[in-house]
Amino acid sequence: MFFDLNITAIYMAFFAIAFLAAAIRILREYQRAVVFTLGRFTGVKGPGLIILIPFIQQMVRVDLRTIVLDVPTQDVISHDNVSVHVNAVVYFRVIDPEKAIIQVENFYDATSQLAQTTLRSVLGGHELDEMLAERERLNRDIQEILDKQTDAWGIKISNVEIKHIDLDESMVRAIAKQAEAERERRAKVINAKGEVEASENLLEAAQKLSKNDLGIQLRYLQTMSDISSDKTNTIVFPFPTDFSKLFNSNIKE
Image (tube, rainbow, N blue to C red; front, side):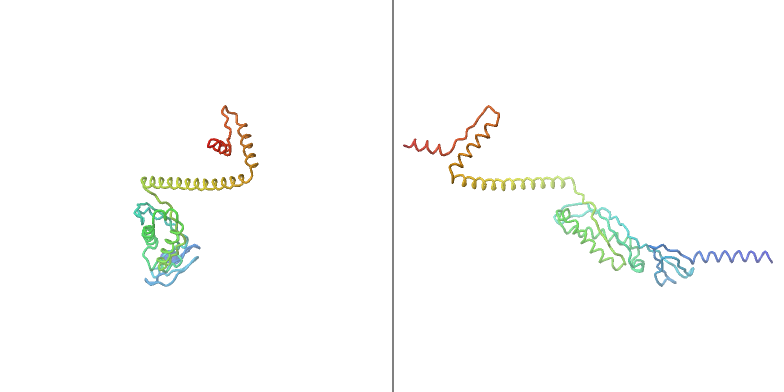
């Protein structure tokens, strides 16, 4: 009799421990539990200690921390028919655990697939130059579209960043040639502007010197001084244009 009571106490203790193990759950600060009672949603609990009715209630853990989603490389054809390979990273988190579990089967996979299709559709509507030069604006456009579509899933898209835009080698060479031609064009424009400014300054200097003969003589002496400091075998003497006019007048006479 005493032996039977001990066995009964052991069984009762075992079932009590198993009951408590199945009933008690501990959630961390960044976790929430979506609780279902006989299959029906009954609430969101946590963090900390929560108690469930074994075999009657079930829970699904949801992590509220920011999730970093690496979008696989996508083949995108730009608006100007250029094929590029683009990959991106998406930062999102769950703000409504109920919707994240009930409204979508797997919110992580759903967000990943939606990010891939949105990346292709948005970038496909822009030209290659816009992809390279206006990346921040494209990031905002993709973020706004994703955030609007994932709102029904209880997900908040906090940031989207396009990481790489890879081009074919032929396109890289074409862009390099285009950049080189652009630099040459700018160099020619700058050179032309310099010539215009120099001609305007020379014209202004000539007008000022023509008003006074002494000014021309002083300029002549300054030129002679500059030549004398050059240690070369060839010496060039500047010849005033007024002297040529005097010789031409004597020849005509």
